[in-house]
Image (cartoon, rainbow, N blue to C red; front, side):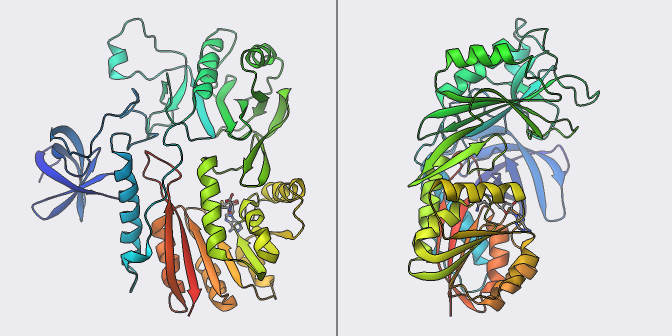
Length: 459
Ligand code: SAH
């Protein structure tokens, strides 16, 4: 087998990460863009010890699972790689991937994993989108052939794997029509010599990102222009015109990121119109979301996720711990299930939001402990009946898992966005716990990302 060689293969299944898997002469081949059932021509790009990496050159016989992707940027934008895969199949594949990660652990059978809970909306489901400004637009192949399309300015999304390549986005299917209209308005407004664009190499220029947020209930929008320097005067007219055109924009903000790292996070915040927050209702609770707050990106499905956690936790408890509590959403949802809920969180700002969320919803039985969980959990000398944990992608530190084993609560409910690290951590818990149920929840239609809730009971 050589690099550049072209081979014909049948794609068999999907790998975690979204690539197709095929076999050729007993070698495993990962094929970007391959859908199970495709008979395809693939070109070998990399030869590794245990597998080959290939690119899809041509689909010779398309899989019956294929469908046309509605987005014209599909295949170039990395946002939603599975738009060409039927939604019911996406749900099946997500469940299969959870089963596969768990099967590496002894005695975990597929029956404990429920069907993936579908997202209420499969398009327009996101409550937040970040678009980047560029002065050096990356053109799609079809645009290269259109002389009227100019390089230069664009406000859009990144080409995957290239931090400095941004393509113009006409319509993003993951956001709703109003968000697309706001994007279009901003694209046209900022196409003007008065505004400079931040350059990643020279570190000069002003505009960096346009972040649009939405709450579903009530239907409100927030627009945040992230700049390299404060720009509230330069943006005053934009804010005025935008607010006139879109009556349900409740907040227009300028946040400033004076650092070189290209992230849409502002250290300084200037209010240009309305209020500094928008409000989202999830179940019976209301949450204020500010420009920098973390919030689950699929609001409607977040409610289903938190309900699943609450069902698994059960009621009538004295004490529940919520590890990696963030802005306290899970703790609030569990406040009716116990006398007390104690959250543990590293970031001070998130902790403050958590207390404010409790106050706003008149919840008095939640408290939050600041700090690195490895240290803070050790300080606890009370016995909780249930521990809920929702760690970041990397999972839990082994010392934290050991601490859970030492505390030995009746139930552990593990919320995860990464089946691989979840399986690793659950394996450490299995000597003392039985895995009762797993509920995959689809928070991110058309992407390979999986969210899941695991219920473990003490043996
Ligand atoms: N449960 C929350 C958010 C979870 S995101 C929700 O549903 O909204 C994971 C959280 O873990 C983040 O807020 C992050 O700041 C926190 N975190 C990450 N590592 C941590 C650590 N070592 N100690 C404490 N908190 C940590």
